[in-house]
Length: 94
Image (cartoon, rainbow, N blue to C red; front, side, top):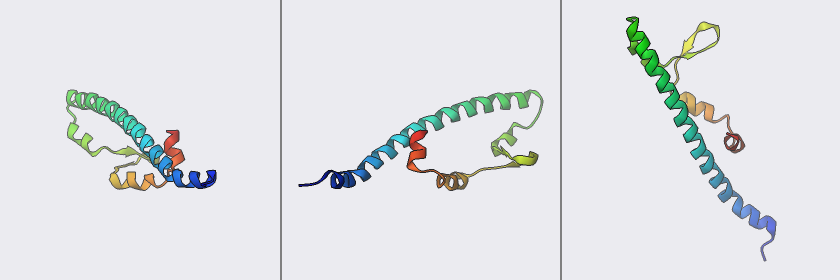
């Protein structure tokens, strides 16, 4: 006879895996919506830069504003580094 705590321990990894997959799906949808908004804004900015004869190709750098008026760029490495700050509970709360 399996007691409830043993059954829970056996099923916990499966439940966590399902929860992580659900969090992944929700976060992908949020990422996609944010990307659409960013691209729409970028298209408008590109058009505005063309109208005032400024080089729109500079937008390809995708700088991120930082403190002190400085700008930095990001890569997949930064996203990977930030990913270590989040637990499964953080992901499910999103």
